[in-house]
Image (tube, rainbow, N blue to C red; front, side, top):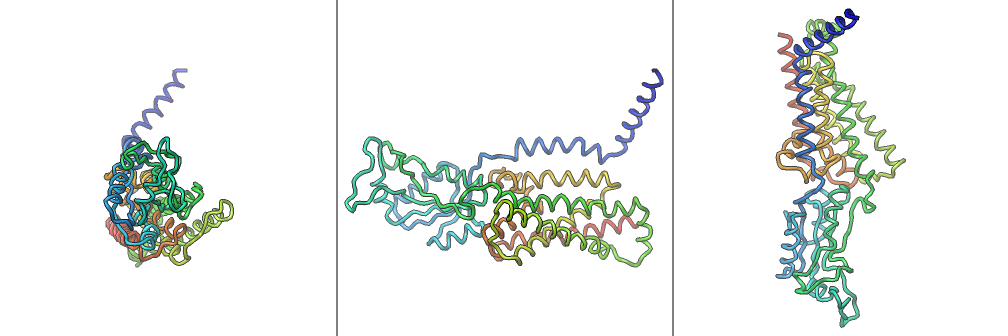
Length: 382
């Protein structure tokens, strides 16, 4: 029995010493719980506030300005743009410049007078019209949480404007939900799932690329060949471009057949966006591969990237609801930019010209990632 416990003790000491020498694993043991604690406790917020919206004010009266101020006072939305007509406003929603637009009609004063009050019901109208909402929200329904938050303003009280208690049997604002009028979760989740799966698989595949060559003893052979570092990096990522495109087609194809997810955009914008994101993810994986000493470490670092990509990219929680510091971190992740691109292309048929920032960011990330990976590989050769 003593020998039994003695052998267990020996293995226990051996594992502790091995863990002590493996600094990367020790860092992950400490950092992953800390990162999850900070993400879920600080960055993740389903109580969304200060959503960027636009205004189309055809009334241009003191009353319309008071209505806008009353809406902003809820702190649910922030008016960041003003448009002269609905066509420009809807184009802004389509290109994700704003998440919704409040339309105030020219006859807002007459609508407010006809709005029902407590104990009076609907006041009579000289032209036989019944009371109508005093305005209209035009909402991007592709993000169900954002849409539901803005939709909650539909029954906003009008007591201050009416100088008497309002009867909220008639909505204050009409609601027009674009791109996902039924508010189905699958419409929002499945395009985002492409970004999550490609992040996981592409980084995982390439993060072990150089490490695998080292563990198999092929690194010495590569050193003796005339191939340049940048050529090696590019050659390693090309096969995975086709794998990533295949995964994208499987997810979107089955999503359309099984869950009736609409496909409103063109194939060219989708292909360009996907290829850029795959390239950025592969470049990030190669950088990880030049840092890790073995495949276990490369897997740990992949998880280190994957968690923020899922939680901060807008896949599960709205980007607009995150604190500013978390948004800065999210902007550094390729998944955040591709999440905007794929949802914009598939659900809103957004134009490439309206998403140039995200496209150029992914392109720049890919170039920088490949250069860094090739330079680090040269350093290993030396």
